[in-house]
Image (tube, rainbow, N blue to C red; front, side, top):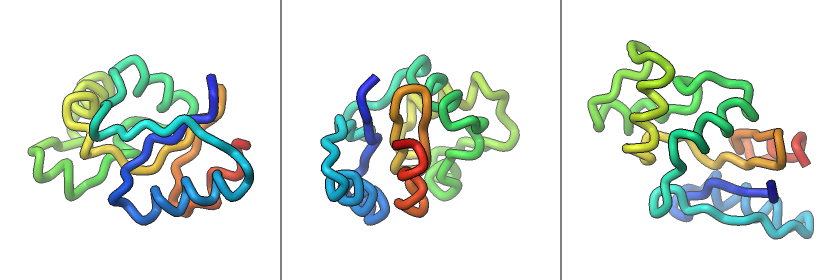
Length: 113
């Protein structure tokens, strides 16, 4: 799998993370996840690479607006909700092979390069 960033161009941390990668001479595959949401299978791979449960990458405000209670949901149900409502995903997420990192702060992604 190539270096991939799940990116929201309206998010400053996402833009900073992309700029950081490009500043290292890397050209990641950019997935604007609001336009092209990851499937449930992709989300499961991302979560495995992150080593996190789904609830740890949920944006609380956006989840509340979508009436999604991440804390009360089973993992599989939450992954399905994320696929259906990609706006609840924390961003950016960078995937490099079998490793992934949440770019908050952006420098965190350097550990998977």
